[in-house]
Length: 354
Image 1: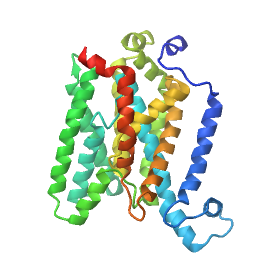
Image 2: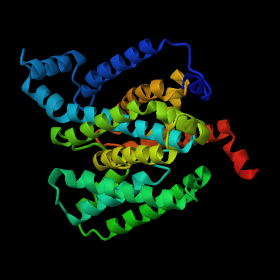
Image 3: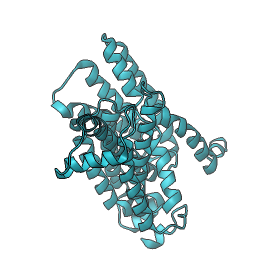
Image 4: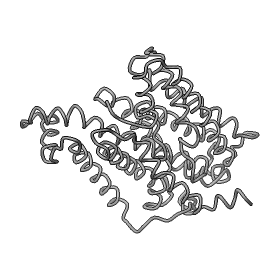
């Protein structure tokens, strides 16, 4: 397996891997504290740390107003932004490996749009069959339907055609977006329409502690399962022959990994809305730092994704304060140039015209 991994594209920068992971983990911890204090009412980082210590250990006192802002309002949102960023980035890294395409991510494959259809259907009908799990369940169902359709349309004789996968994903993404618009237009409540529009653009306003457990558990469990299969993902990147040489059933592994990606995407979209391009940008940054070996790249992708969306959410809160900017707008500003640079670097435009 080591010999095969050495054939993977891209080389890492000269940074010791344990040092890099430690630096990123430390940066994420510090960012959580600092970001929690940023907003219309600023709270110093030291005071934030004191409030967190008070709640986690039961020691010390904290001002009532600052405690309300930090513990009940901002901290759940900051943590959810980190969880959502980690989930989206991880999903993008796995999709790019499975389909062997550097510009693939759940958004381009239509998964995010499919999840949005399911979630908006619940929001517009007021259905709550599964209680708190209704919205994540509907989003997962929508993402699963989208994945099934796209894979069926992009396959020929049991083989997945990578270029067709992107084209079909983009096409059905537009179709699902049209279905979402239709559901939105059928809604009579103007307040519900405004809420759904903001949610479709991506946003974490209104996050509470009750919102956090489901996505945190799903992202944590899925991340652990994907990390345990990083060696198999390396083999899939190298092609059918490498997978067969290692005794792997490539088709079965692809379906299993894509099911986990669908679960990640549906769950994150259910709580954060349609945030695009995180799964495209972050995996490429991770490869630049540690190379293409998924055993090293996936943990870095998780940390970078959490950092990226955490600070994107901070920017969304403060750029046009007291109003709030949808996170999807910020990630689009970063994602579109990155998408074009990746296409140019990999010569995809030349391949299409050849």
